[in-house]
Image 1 (cartoon, rainbow, N blue to C red):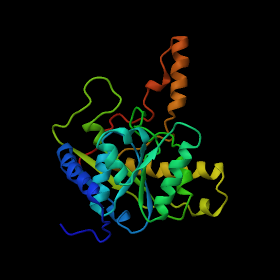
Image 2: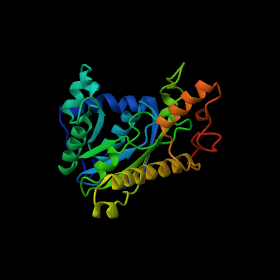
Image 3: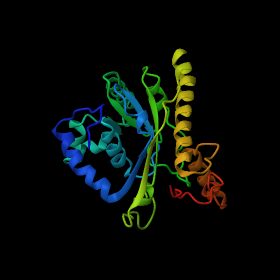
Image 4: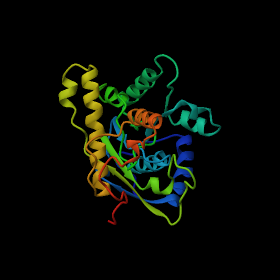
Length: 272
């Protein structure tokens, strides 16, 4: 296979990661990548993806690397304490996110901004965790994605994936891992999100919020294309859902959060 024209050379640790990740991704699913031309570019850019399974970083890593670039993930700092994995993360320049202590989140945003300014690729999941939306749509975004997107004049590219949740289903009771039969795992890159108007004005809380929701809307709409169904009008708010569940438990009535957030009857990906 010919080398990508935007191939980014890595170190020995990156080669080690590829030796592990490429066969593993192949065994766990048939990855279908589309829209790669939007991400096949030089210079720094921010990838913003939905999060439906703990396997997402594996498939995202392979998709981005095959384009020719090296993804730098913003991941929870506790992973750096895991033997071997921690060394691989540190030596492949991944970005730890420590949510404990004053200014911890700001430190990770500054590290991500510095990486982007150096022409590197950063990937973020604005949900902050695997989605808790009953129909697996993106949740209400955390504001960090908007702050990061407004930190410089670099492309912000939405990424949608679907199918990894059928291989490994996160946060459910009972059997979670379903590797067989092999399933299609879709990864679609979209056109950069237009943020020129927000970048031209003051980068205050309102602008950060507007950028965060505009980006997450692009991710949600791209996911709707992949799934072939209509997305919900509003984003699932996990904190609000938890409050409603507690209130319902106190009065002894069923929680409204158990109902789907959209009128979709089946979240399965159509055959393509």
